[in-house]
Length: 279
Ligand SMILES: Nc1ncnc2c1ncn2[C@@H]1O[C@H](COP(=O)(O)OP(=O)(O)OP(=O)(O)O)[C@@H](O)[C@H]1O
Image (tube, rainbow, N blue to C red; front, side, top):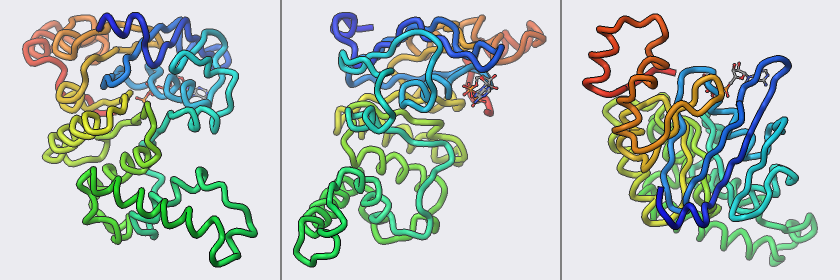
């Protein structure tokens, strides 16, 4: 953790607790993420990763705790207000409009920022025409910056799954968020494409300066991109720090391999670190 972050983190989660009926899904969680960091949240199935993302983006209201983004309290704000503050998100189920072109998908993402009224949509030279032109330009600039311009006119659903994942990230980045929440970016991506995904995420983070918070089961991706990783288990923080250290921690291996895993299996995994855990 850098000194700058201790003074001024972009995202601060304090004492977060989420209950679903009698189940405590998140238990007094503290997290701090610095501006420009790539931070991975990992953990076995049901550990609470998605619940944390849902609390940040506003889909779930926690029972206790607080979340600050750039110093501002998030919990009193509706989801759309959090997005307007600069928090973007991708979903594991891509939620692209598959019959629309990639360009149109990026335009649709910007639509909520186009405050054109019904009348200006009807008038040929109204405000919406100008906004549409600038949104198109902005979408093309984003695709070009990300090296995805070749896909612009292809229908999103016709692309290989790995490319669709990249478009999903581009759709979040077109709004120039300060923080993007990535929900399992490597899920469904063929193993031979995971390294390329990692390279692109690193490059994009550097180009745009966007802070990335990702949840992920693919430890190869985590090790390749994350500056820091936090392991959740039963809604509690089990370990946090640099990926190489955290992912070879015996408690983390035990959580992933199951409490019944043999000592031998754990020793074998420890020598390699956790590599890839299917979600
Ligand atoms: N809406 C809900 N209602 C009731 N229980 C829920 C709800 N959402 C999540 N849970 C429970 O909360 C716990 C944490 O779930 P969560 O989806 O956050 O875990 P996760 O770490 O993202 O898991 P996975 O890796 O399988 O996606 C689980 O026990 C889950 O069954």
